[in-house]
Image (tube, rainbow, N blue to C red; front, top):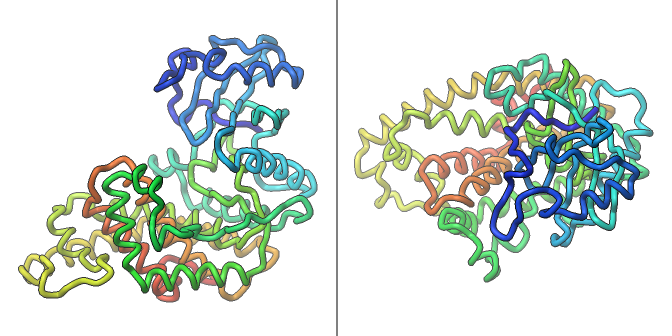
Length: 400
């Protein structure tokens, strides 16, 4: 049980540098070797270390006595750094009391709460779920196993699991206005997307309704930040990683994250090869208050009809490609879940729709303008949030 070193592509720690950073682990993060020594580990072999990109600083390598380790240093400047550390440890405690599982997770070998350093067992030659999906290796069998894994997770004992103050879509005040700091830190594309979201009163109502239904649902132990790259496959064993958001919450958050990843892949690909001007003509519906007299679609009805037909065919093709995986995942979950409430599927669709917005926001953070493709993906997410009941059967969330 351990973390991956083979994917994503790693960078030697000695080559890691950036603004204000000194190359090399011992110069860049001197508290890490100190933490390892305090935990009783032998010194790190600097030649074995590779670093990984991500929200947290992380390194994989071996100590001088040959012990393989995956080291994660949480952001000490973030206000929730200690909370994220504690939640990672809480998962270890909850897992111990859960009994036999069909999946594994990297074993936590030790941690230093003062320095926010976590040390995990090293897993060599693991493949992430994203890589498997890209290579058509995330098949229905693996999807069914993933569904079962989440059902088992949601059945964990709750004694060591804490809720978070505000789970759900976590939009907060940003639907009304951005702070000055948020505004100045945002890219042009992010500001354009927030501009659309802040004017969309129907979307506001859908998000509030989803959060309210989530708050009323049974809260179970959940991963809290589920993405495909947190599933690993190594030597045939399915593993799930990254537990800093482990919490008591609506299980639909996890399920919607998985389903949303596949819908995002389908929505991204449905625009491949389609002229971006045609996409603009078709996705004017993402405007919260469109003026029929000003849309490109009405300026050229023939072009709009062609764009609509092209996108519909592309969308049907791409959705058909991911439906077997989503359906197998859902059946794997249903067959092994301890409890299923009648509104679960509808909330899963809602969170899957929000995931499309979340991923669009992530890609917008590095772009100066919001592209037609990004607007189109956000439009698909909006549709799922506004009418989740219409999506349940279409995306395979059925009883059998």
